Image 1 (cartoon, rainbow, N blue to C red):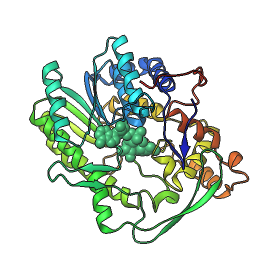
Image 2: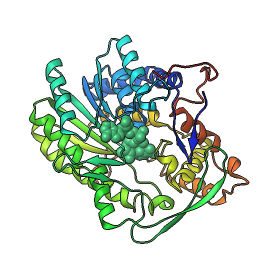
Image 3: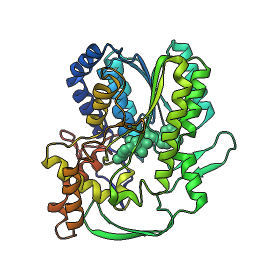
Length: 397
Ligand SMILES: NC(=O)c1ccc[n+]([C@@H]2O[C@H](COP(=O)([O-])OP(=O)(O)OC[C@H]3O[C@@H](n4cnc5c(N)ncnc54)[C@H](O)[C@@H]3O)[C@@H](O)[C@H]2O)c1
């Protein structure tokens, strides 16, 4: 089975490859487990016992769930929205990742329950709350890691669609084809006010707040409960399309929501944080012009400096060096947890900028980390995993 890739979108996923990838992340977390328990011991902070991960199946959410379960020993409940496989068509990577996670958790004697459901729907909140009550779980962590193009507002039934567009002026940026390395220029028209508002509806903090209020109201949050949602800032080159674009407005809203949720969780001794993570290759980042080229240039620079991290490295650091650090959780002046400090270091940005502007179609494979980008992109769909026989027939289910 080979990957079917069109315009940097991979349309299929390999069941055994996804399982191998999840197994690989679990093994890495198990190897780092003693550093997590040592951090908890040194700070006197308890390891989480029950963790809810919204957006649990891939990327940062999956890495968070694996850390909570396999390094902290937590019971985990996950929610993600997947396409099931049929006899003729593979499911989404997340469908296989969830299955692999649940099987590994069961084998390790860890409680796990996974909902394949729309996290934006009130019914899904009700199902999670019913399960928590039935199992006697009170969440001491809620991880919010949803990345979605659409959200149906449960209050109005209106479906909102998010856009990745600049504000005010059109934006032209370069991108590359992950398969053949050809480069092209893409121009994106600015978002309208309605599109910006819709993007905030989908990717802003409204749904996060609905979750925390519903869980708190139902009494399924433990004292001291911490909730973390993920954000991104990034450098100048991506600012017009990312932080200064429609998605940036949504992230600002998410960050404001952390402030109000912290105040609401205070009586419980809890807190809400936004963690600013580093840029990694995911299904979304490969299709954003400029961002893909920036990420490939960043990877080359960070690998050369011995600073490279993927989702799993970042989430181990979130737990060990931030959530379980001695004293208050380290945050920046705006109250955000920063995991992008290596990406934003002056020498990393200098090297990345040089490569970003030097890259041409002729020199792409040497100038940026095309191979590393391609591997991570394929791995996210269960391809290019060592030890997997891609010639063998695999049932999709
Ligand atoms: N990728 C990056 O470089 C990067 C960097 C910093 C921060 N972040 C942030 O991290 C968060 C997660 O992003 P990611 O890159 O890991 O994305 P991802 O696409 O790998 O994961 C998104 C998750 O959301 C789930 N999901 C989407 N719509 C859903 C719905 N309606 N109901 C239930 N589940 C749904 C998916 O199933 C998946 O589990 C986002 O907030 C993103 O902005 C990403």
